[in-house]
Structures are given as structure tokens and as C-alpha cells.
Image: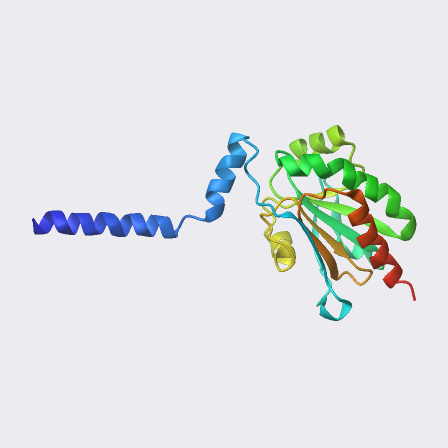
Length: 200
């Protein structure tokens, strides 16, 4: 009897230990691999604007783009930059893609740029998405890039897609949209406000 009790206790301990080593994102990754479009963590499109005094330090990052080039935050110095976290099998990411491209086109004249942050895909799948949805701005590949994840982790969950950040002309997060962008006008206004605030 004692042996059976001890065996049961050991089995429970092992199960607890394995559970403790399992990340909540393991299920997320499994859903993504299955291609069932549930593999995303998302909000409801909530918009948060951050007062200038509360924006903290500028984001500094560097990574490899879909085309193999290196892109860094320094490339966008003095300009408003929109960062959009996405991946190819994320349904809300596909739905918002045309709106992002529209706002990108509309706001270049005010000194704004866009940069995608692909959180899961390799260059082939990410490039196919860009071609399908007519995305003309570049994206960095985050999968396997620990430095890029670390650089952005304080400002956005690196597992959350879609999430959109608007960086002001100093590189600080001025607005955050958690979830699918449903209205191009919302993002356009956030970008234009950030751009006008940077004009002395």
C-alpha cells in the first residue's frame, strides 16, 4: 500500500513539474501550426494614447527584414513610426492589412513610416502575405531573434497579434492599439497627431 501511495505521489509530482514547464504559449503555437486561425492573442481594438510626459525612453531595436536586409530604429530617427505586430495565419491581421497599407500611403506626406514585426513566420510565408495583401512597407522577422524580442517586450507583448504601436518623432510609444484595427481613420489621426506634436 505504501508503495502505491508513494508511486501516486511521485506521479503527481512529475505531472506538476511538467505543467510548470509548459508555457501558456505552447497551446498558442500548437494552434498556429494547425492553421486553425485561433493561434493569436488579441484584444478588442482598444486604443490607448500616452501623454508625452509618460512615454518613457525611446525604443531602440534592430532586426532582419523579410528581404534579408537589416533595419533598425535609427533608420527612422525624427519620424513617426508605426509598428504592427502580425503573422500570416492570424485572421485579424489579414483583415486589417488593407487599412494599414491605406494609412501608410496617406501619412507619408506628414513624415510617417510603417514597419511590420512578424512574430512567427519565415521569409517565404511573410513575403507571400505581403504580396497577397499589397503591403509595400517592410517587416522584421522576430522568430528566433531574441534581441529584437527583448528590445520590444516592454512596449508590447511579443506574442500578441495584431498589436499596433505609434512611436513619436523621438521614438517613444505615443499610442497603442491592442487588437484588430477596424477604422483607418483612427490610426490616421493617431499618426497625424504624433507628427504634428513633433513639429517645433
